[in-house]
Image 1 (cartoon, each protein chain N blue to C red):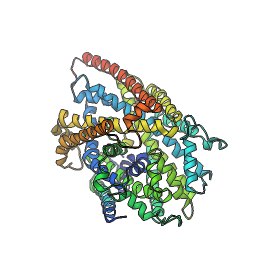
Image 2: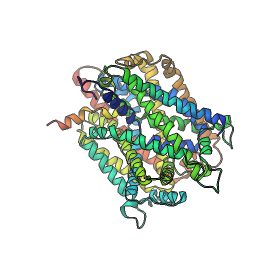
Image 3: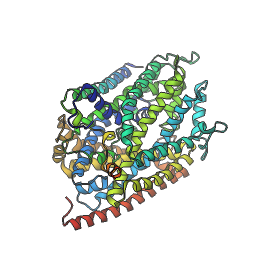
Image 4: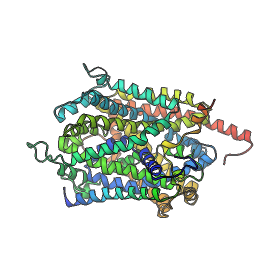
Length: 539
Length: 54
């Protein structure tokens, strides 16, 4: 794409669009988003979701691109180094602990879900997904992921490697690290330049089938596709009115978390990659196009097909009781493939395989922030950094696989790191950009080489609205969790006190945080020594 | 599906489709856009190039 002097054609420009939009597509669009929308009654969830996109996701994505490129000019590629450049305070690099923990710990369970996608693709290829009714698909998923008890995810009895989630996890893990170790991400990028359009074609085929499902079970006429769409999009539900359904701080927090998760904002990933750009490269239109492509896949494809289909096959009671936000797609989509008039196995294979590829591109990028820290902070070579990260993430993934009952470890890390951690990091970054770097200097950076002019209203949004919004939702969530927990399921804070797996998962998060804090402390010493040797201060 | 549901769906799906359409138009209409636009996937980090060099 960046070949100087290459004659531009419509083909190369379309290639750019596919690369930029495809880079943001991953498991968040087709699996995590529908799970959250279903959990919070669909229509009610979409309001905080879109507000979060406009007031948080898009502006913070721009701030990350701008801060990353700014830090890159001073020779830093890791978030702790870039935070130190932007904020002359001893605490600055240590906030970067979050920017390390978030991508590395999300990788620990993301690669496992990636393995589920690969396993489903291979099972379709070998014709091993021929279940007869929706319940059988649910039972298979429960056995495959070991939801019934801890340590049960190793294999399904009598199904060989096709029934072993661990086998596919090892396969994915090795594949990821070989690609990273050998620096073959460009090969994957080339592969995805045609795989991404194919994934979209598969998704459109599935969408058309979902919208023409009608009423599959005549015994239950209430389970029809129109009511499924209603479940996803009606602002008020049968149980709750419009305003009442919005009074859930955790929903607002998870909606923001989903926007961050699927746009890869608040991960420390964009900052690191932006630091490698040239100073006259566009970041404004690139950031917007990636966000737009991601939202199209998430809302127009993921939102229209998975939740309505899940409603049709299982009813809304099951939707809300789903084991994990990621589980819904794995028990719903196979039912849709089974209802295709022809080629259901082929579409099933293609869909899960292409989703697996999209996930690989995302998981590869999750390790780059930590690799950058190990290289510039400790002076390690890339391969040594990759080997060290391989060990850390292997331990973490094994932890997630072993504590499989109700997918509790996965769910706990997904909330406390994949939602809460991202949320806190995003809050810090928007304050860093708006108040410490300064919104005017920040926009100078954003405008340099930009193909579009970012509307100036975003200066006000970034400086005042985004931080106030993040703080308000956080305080409301903390108040409700501590003093007014909703009836039924224990709140996230209560679960820490009551559930042993949740306690262990929190311990794991703290352990990884401590490890990165030590690595950052070591890096700071090294940076100071380098600066002293150069006879200058940091910028 | 209520009237509110139809409105929410059409606005949401229409909104994100229009936004993506506008971005595609801008990329196609901007001269030399391929030289300046980037995604995470197309950035080869310098450390990879270092490892490859003899």
